[in-house]
Image (cartoon, rainbow, N blue to C red; front, side, top):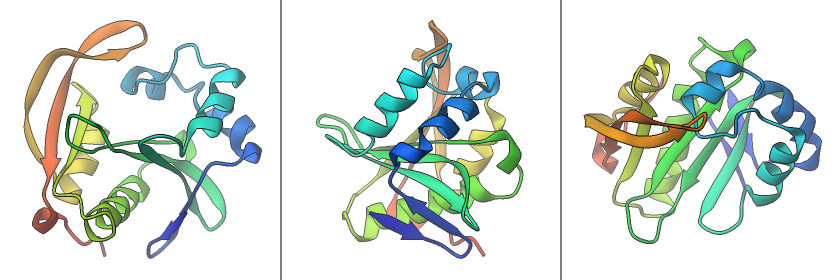
Length: 171
């Protein structure tokens, strides 16, 4: 599966991505703001690549001009609404890559998968993730107390959702 936008190509993770994922996820900011294992080992990256598109999730490596920038996943859940998750490597932050990737994956979810809603969550304090979600049209609905596990601790998280007609076009 491949998706593309104005400047990004999103493709499934491959074995050749394992070392890059391992290196990028040494970033303590990613570990603090996501549910990835902490500390993050090469075996974790191997599992990530192996399980990326199995079960009820579709994961993409985000690339810009052939360079890896981050990862994004759309999770389909049996008993709750679909959700999106993403991280961007340190060198690629601040250039709108996450916003462009989120809007493209959400558009695919709404148009091709016919999803009625996509949800988002981020640890309280992850202002970058919140800004990406809001730019894409997500409505921040509130704060859930101690609902996100990160670095071995339960943390409060912000939650939001996006309906098809709320998705914003990113120029």
